[in-house]
Image 1 (cartoon, rainbow, N blue to C red):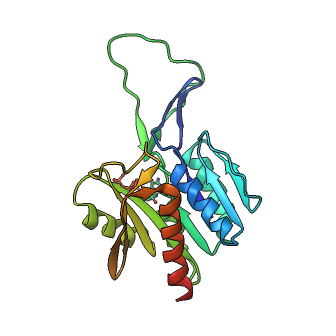
Image 2 (cartoon, helix red, strand yellow):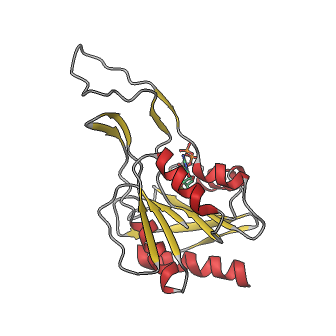
Length: 209
Ligand code: CTP
């Protein structure tokens, strides 16, 4: 099971808080796991992407709460859980039921924390499940990623540094370092499909030796 893409948190009927996640990394991983024989549940926020492999079941969602509900339904049956979504950390406390009209020079929208899907699932992780998270960092990259690995009870975390040219949200390429409890594996800048293959290989090695 994988999460992918951004989440959109509505402000009113026409506006939302979102981010620039394209979903490409998560979808590339879903395709790669499927090619290697997995039955894949892909829970994705809004993207322009489609899936072609019949082994992938795509469940489209919009908000973090919807993503969490879809993940909870599917988590128990999953052996490998990959949290590649860029979940909005906060959502508006109130969703206006009518379009907010402009008035005055300032507008304040109160935000409340969204559920941390990876961390919530990490609390109920079973011994035979393998969890992969993602981290996008700009400074203290390795230390921050290692902290997320521990806090979210993940088996590995894929670190993208925004300091690397060609890596991150808007590119077809990515440069990752995979951090595990006992060490780190750095990879070259590659196409996201090749990055997906590296991650799947590493997960396979950890599961099957
Ligand atoms: N994640 C999640 N649910 C959230 C936030 C994050 O499932 N509400 C998952 C992401 O899919 C990713 C990992 O947690 O696998 C790390 O997300 P990131 O946003 O980098 O970390 P945060 O814990 O939100 O920390 P910060 O934004 O402060 O760096």
